[in-house]
Length: 563
Ligand SMILES: Nc1ncnc2c1ncn2[C@@H]1O[C@H](COP(=O)(O)OP(=O)(O)O)[C@@H](O)[C@H]1O
Ligand SMILES: N[C@@H](CC(=O)OP(=O)(O)O)C(=O)O
Image (tube, rainbow, N blue to C red):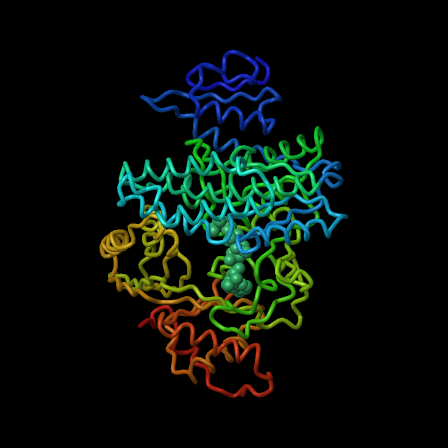
């Protein structure tokens, strides 16, 4: 059969209209529909799969194919006329009815744009949903509806609908279902990662429904979309899922198709996806709406991606640590990615990837102060005068000092160490090595997401101790100096001068392969003070006042020079 996909040991996935689909499990139906919406097998490609015991061996192959093959051009020449940009509004931008009205006005103030809108949940709804879920585990079924956070969420959304003049029925089913879900959690006395994702999805599902209804009420034609229904296909890593390549053509096809048949501004839920194996709702990690926005930007080949926040752009440091933080006017994708990965909450760590791949500029703007120029993030920028761009802090990091028990000259030590991390599925952030020793930090989010932190750490140490002497050092912070590493001597000279003056001992330093980041590891309890002092030195004090003749501590810091 032309355009068919062989699965289940001979059974065939056919186009949706044909009867042979009934042979398939719901999971494979889903794979089939992804493949179809992505145009995967219209050219007669076939994939064979085998049943092994109760398992279907082709699932991985299908994922690979979805991941690898479905990367055809997303944007036709028409797209540019259909949509011009994506505008993402975070929780702080849509925290109340008044804020939603302002955002609607902001959208209307760009009549030349044809935007796709991505929204997060209102205000702190995601945190409150998580708290409600945790309380439900131990509160008993009869009390589940009375959980304080549930009452708050219900009142906030109903009041918002009322103030905006939209029918409460637009979210009534979601509120009922949410209450049922909390009762279910209370009954089971269990909150799995999968349930957690489903639970938090109610936030984005409700904010987008209210906002789309409001836009329609004021005469701006809009259409609401749940991302998990329009092709946001992810891994099944609940609470931290990755977007698969098949997402791009599927999302483009759906949004462009709908626009062509009935033009309306799409209002898409940020943060959410659908696990390709489980078909369940997944989330892209906290702050994941930024990634939703850049994914849509790439899928549609848009001119610009705008992320609207409650700050005047990316700042020189976290304003919660130092109120003197200043907006950074320009950044490269590499700088922004590094900054996000090393802890700046302002952008999701993975969000720069689609923008970089699609070479689409990202503009970070303030919805509370739209006149502020914000930060423009592009592939390249003039670095000739750039020294330091931003200082980022990642707290509560675990560091390991690993010294080989073998003698100098033994090869394969590093390979064996990293094999252990690979086997245990733990990612490493910062590394410094010598021939027989290495120091590294572990990515806390990967550990926390599995809530096994201490057992896992014990396990890592146990495994490493088979080949090395291991010291586990907790409560450390990574201070990342994002900037022009071409000028690393100047940056390090200033940084060490400041740290020495403040009596801080740097326990590890890594410039690594990154061309934009120098990482310093210090104790947690010294970290904020360090950031403030570094900020003053790099951004607030006249450069000439810094004595270039100060002694650097470079010589005393190395992979093996850890506390
Ligand atoms: N370097 C930084 N630049 C800007 N904001 C930062 C930085 N580091 C941390 N932040 C924090 O990030 C917040 C904005 O990100 P986020 O809360 O995710 O926004 P939204 O919910 O609107 O998408 C700011 O309010 C600020 O407190
Ligand atoms: N609501 C989700 C997703 C998100 O991106 O939110 P925000 O844009 O408000 O950071 C969260 O709180 O993580």
